[in-house]
Amino acid sequence: MKILGIGVDIVENKRLLKLIKNKSFLLRLFTSVEIKNSRLIRDKSNYFSKKFAAKESFSKALGTGFRKGLNFKDIEILNNNLGKPYFRLNNRTKKIISKLLKVKNFDIFLSISDEKEYSIAFTIIQTKNVQ
Image 1: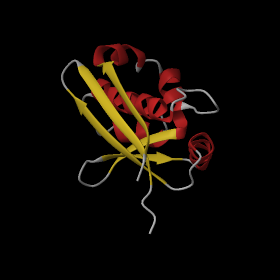
Image 2: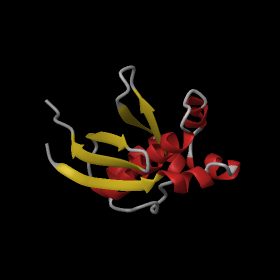
Image 3: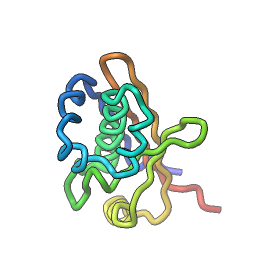
Image 4: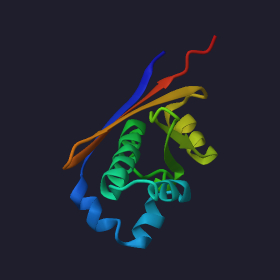
């Protein structure tokens, strides 16, 4: 296994609190599933800050930022039944990864944390251990 990219991002939660009041901002950056799941969360600014930081950390791990055809809504952040966050990527994003990093099989790891004022996300993209 080889690490192909590492990305980290930190977000001030109150900055997102102002932005998420704008519905067009939400619809431009977050998927319908992410927005729907936010209805179950009391602290919306922390919820969206963590998602935003995760998407930014992914773009940094890829090494492009949001260029080369990559958009915020192409990256969806979900949680498994134990609460562990993970990326759900559409086929277009998988093709971007394959083309830019010159790999077909890869794993992506995500860690997210938050405190009252800040949210942080860390992403690793590595080759998949194919046997």
